[in-house]
Image (cartoon, rainbow, N blue to C red; front, side):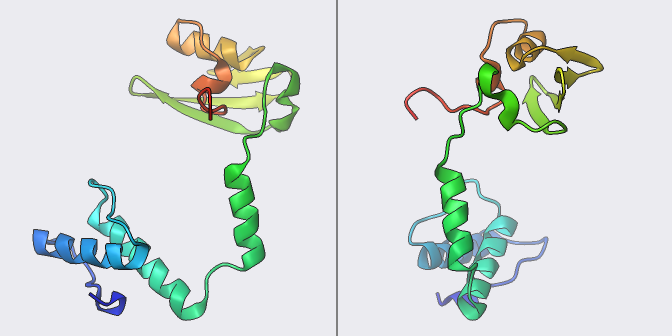
Length: 144
C-alpha cells in the first residue's frame, strides 16, 4: 500500500486497520513492526516518516550528532561522577515503585536522604548489593 494511503485511526480500530498499518510499516521501514506496537504509535511513526519525505528530515549535522550520542557509552563511575551534573534527576522503577534520585553536591538525594554513591542508593532500594550505575541503567551490560 502506498504510504500516502495509510488510514488515519480512531478509537474503534479493527484488525483490518492493523493489517493495513503493518503493510504500510513494512513498505516504509523495510521490516515488520514489533508485535505489540500500538496502532497509534505505528500511525504516528508513519505520519512522521511521510512528513520527513515530503518536507525533508533532520539536517545531516543533527543526524550525525544524534548517531554519535546513541553510539557513545560515556563512562560514569565513582571517580568520574562529575559527568552527572548537579541537579540531574535519575528515575528508576523497581517492583512497582518509581524512585527518583537527584545528583547533589555531596552525593545523591533520594527520599530526603543523601547517599554517598549510586551503589548505596541501589542497595537501599533493592536491599542487595548492586552496581549503582547498572541498576540505574547508566552503564550497559558486560560486553556491550
